[in-house]
Image 1 (spheres, rainbow, N blue to C red):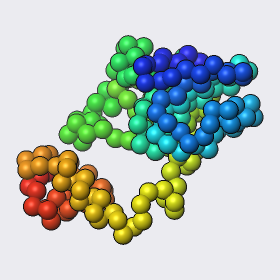
Image 2 (cartoon, rainbow, N blue to C red):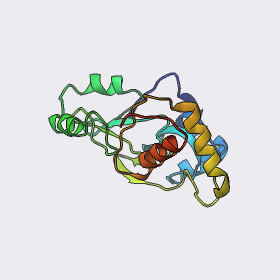
Image 3 (cartoon, rainbow, N blue to C red):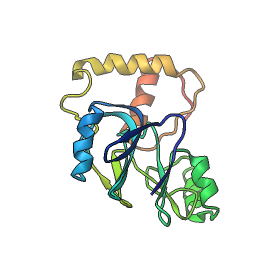
Image 4 (cartoon, rainbow, N blue to C red):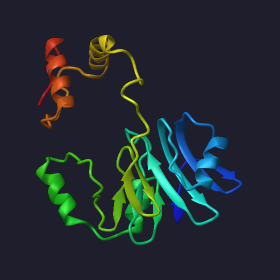
Length: 195
């Protein structure tokens, strides 16, 4: 495995391997060493991109629930990339199906692993890549304890929309709950969005 890092990732040389991490996690690095020694995917929360390469050959990469620091990987060479530009240069073969799907969705991207290159895949939110196999790990967010209580969300959403939306801004209505919630709250606040 070869990791193509960028300035967001800080390298930590540990006794049993090398860790690159961008952002923050809720677990001390010393405790991660025990997980890595046992080949266990760490149970961490935070906003992060994380790549581990062990001296014993075990490696993995993981992203948080929002893919705050996205990662891509080559299916053929086990390279992991922290920037799309790195991945795009690594694989010159265009994936025409990806571009057809994007055109069908009017330029919007989907959440799957497919990218604009045939041999490059994206690590999805709340997923890890364990020696080339992508799997969901469900550890980065706990809906029962993370965040403010339910009775505060209306105020939080209204403030976020007042701060980030103004008349004429475009909103893609995907048919999901998020976009329709934003559209309804903006309408309630008197903000005229374009759909």
